[in-house]
Length: 215
Image: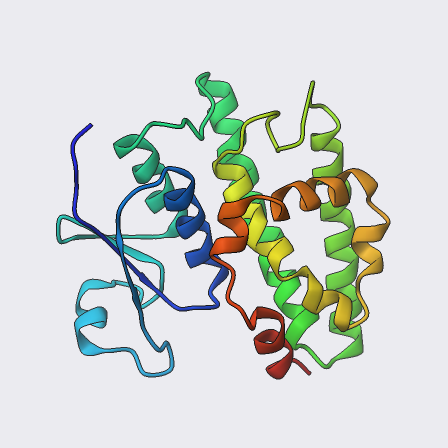
């Protein structure tokens, strides 16, 4: 396994950055961590980030963007411990649930935190409740737990963990019932939050930071 010079460019409370930090922690990979201010992005960052977003991982000075791409690259460069299934169909299924998180969960979660429109909030709650139903059904197909694919913490778990790191803010805003009504999913969230890597990358004032920008 070759060594590489890695630098992860980050924003302290970004959930997408948190995903990649968790993967690096789980694999115990040496890396530099550079935090930037997204409200005042440095020119050097804009020059290497096509979308102007974090995370961005420099691998031997080559920039890679998009968290799911970064995480799969880390998995390929540092395959131990493995965080992706061996079988192609299982790997495709894992990727599908990562996309599901991106496309369905994250936007609706942001609505819970930041919208002050009652109709928009109710729509987001309905979408999240349906999504939680879907995830819970998937979790109940496992032969064993406590993680998404069984006993081993994987890339899917690294993607879902930041959501639950932020769930306290949703509870403070009166939406805690959504998770309480999904017992299997709640147990899964607790298993993720018990993971050292998940807690180590969590910003100290994460909930307070979210609430300070909420409606």
